Image 1 (cartoon, rainbow, N blue to C red):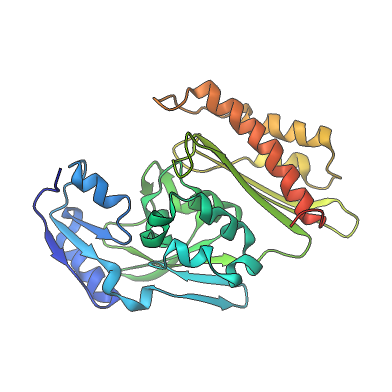
Image 2 (image 1 turned 180 degrees about the vertical axis):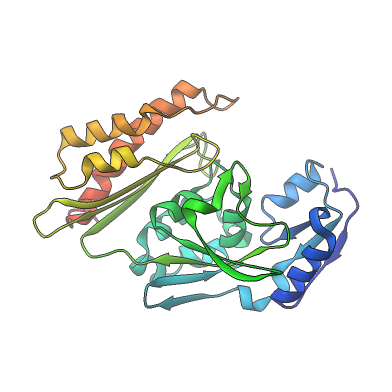
Amino acid sequence: MKPAVFDYHAPAIVQEAVELLQRYGEDATVLAGGQSLVPLMNLRLSRPGHVVDLNGVPELDYLTVDGEGIVVGATTRQRTLERSDTVRDLCPLLWRAMPLVGHFQVRNRGTVGGSLAHADPASELPAVALVLQAEVGVVGPTGRRDVKAEDFFIDAYTTALDSAEIVEHVRFPSLPGGTGTAILEVARREGDFAMAGVAASLTLDPEGLCSSARLALFGVGPTPVRVIKAERILEGRAITEELVGEAAAMAVQDLDPSSDVHASAAYRKRVAGVLVRRAIAEALARATGEQT
């Protein structure tokens, strides 16, 4: 199928893009990588009257390092992060997540800002942003603001963005020494959306106790799910196999995933618990230097 008729706009600067979105309101949509939007338009599940293409805005395409971590422009391609030694060294969880995002053809066009703004419940980047305590830089008619990842994702495909706002950049803080990370998922085929997945970060103190734990599930709710109760089980303690099992059970205790043609709710919940256990073990091995 082909999309319904729409007007195409190609702004050259951020402010022009914001003005177009403000002018056309709910009848306008943003095109970044287009890996989600274009299929929806072709199936006529999305029928915007105006498409504002950000690909001609060079100020949105960059990857830099600041004193707190890395800053990624909204239209930076996912493939750029996958191939970046800087991302691998300073933000390994983000780097590890990239090969799980679709196929390489998708990552060649898909953007970091686009993935976060689309907010698919089964996508990897929102969960990674939650674990890393990322901040999303947003620009709109009233100026710029930073939104914490935990406040950015409101519901399935719904974010804190107003209709005339766009994602300008994402800041991913560096993790302290003694930190290990992991991201695991189960999908029907390589490149498919996850039926269940988990992103994890563990930091050990000099005595080998867990000083910080962050766990986020994806594919099992309308947004990425931070499992704080499970994190608290791990923090302040030496991580043992028994403790990992306890945390994994707690992580899925309150989960209420939905069923669909790909997996039942019970299957998603069962798989999530297994993945939490494995992700904690993998992150621990990296924190102790047993695994790279």
